[in-house]
Image 1 (cartoon, rainbow, N blue to C red):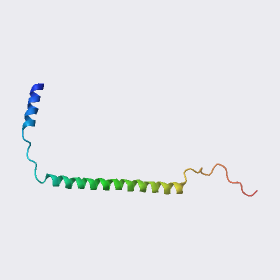
Image 2: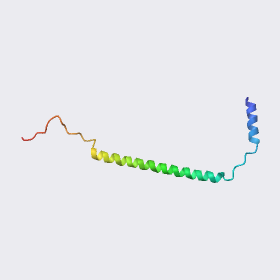
Image 3: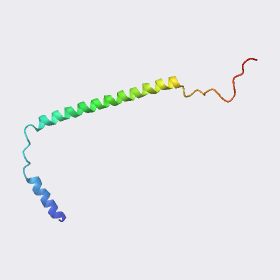
Image 4: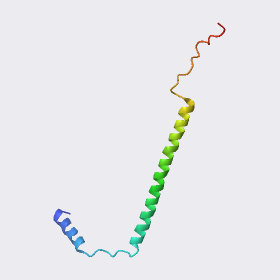
Length: 82
């Protein structure tokens, strides 16, 4: 199909009357949009809650394990009884 045929077909499609829209389409779209918005909000809140819980867990681990402190040396015994 060459370009003039395609253009003629597109013009013919555009000149036709559009198909009728169902009367309850707007209500369905609003209902689905509201549901999507609620789900997205709930997912965002769950992710923030998960991030907060992970931060608290890391903070508790860091305060109890103290990974920045050098462990005591075990190669020489402590000097006692001098």
